[in-house]
Figure 1: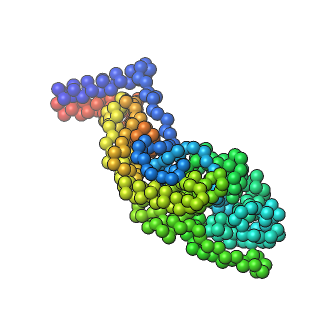
Figure 2: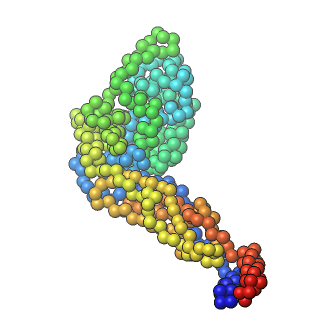
Length: 414
């Protein structure tokens, strides 16, 4: 009878729990943090690096091309003229919004652009795909305007598209006025912003194929004129792993260059603005090499979060069979890091819960910080299901206990 009495006391305890529920004393935990979308906040933040590189450039930045994280900057948030590095955005919009088989007609406005030109006459027509080589290899200003008018309807319309794309990419301190980068009031960027734009651009294989082409020959649509263009990017053939991208020069901007390089798992984008004026045409190459060497030498890929991350078990009230719930995450995060960079984790998880718990539902987040800046927010999930003590459960327990007692009584155990 002792065992039956013990089971009966357990059943009474369950019934008591039901009374508490009916009395409204138990309350559901409601403090779960709202899930926040990972927008790579750190991707556009300086990591606190105190290294000072010797650079000629007035403004410079080095970014991890994989995620846009700024690894080094010198006046990287300072607005600057950017000359023909503007054409990176022009090219990307042409690839995304145009058709390479489109026929582009040169207007009088396009044909009259100054400085570096393809010297197309008003009314001449070319395929858009061919003009992109003119745009990126020789940096023809008339070509840039012809493309802009074709895609955007006008230079002003295309500039609006450029600015919308800049905002989309997080280049919030950038404003475009021209598609070719000729000096104009209100036309500016920052080294960090331009790096973000370039990180996006090199994810487009058509863009990479363009900027890596040594030379290209094409004709106008009538076949009466032949145009030959040559890649002016000395970095492309002068640095191990170089991917290109774009040079620039104006009287206001000075010499500028946006570069990209890849070795193994490391891909970097560098930006140098105002890297000297004539006759110092080679400063931009030296600055780019300095930035790239720094990245290649000091940064290594590390895993900063994986599924083995130790998560606590959360206490659960009013549950059946279990009084804690296990947690798990699915994210694996790797990152190029240098020695001395601090990784910090913040867990946003409930201190306690009430059943029921559904397996696979969101429990909270683990936020990963590099220094003081959020880099990634990993979603944490419930690892098991816990049913709640309810009327059905209590009645079933009472019935089970009743029939068990009856069976034992009939067997002569009571």
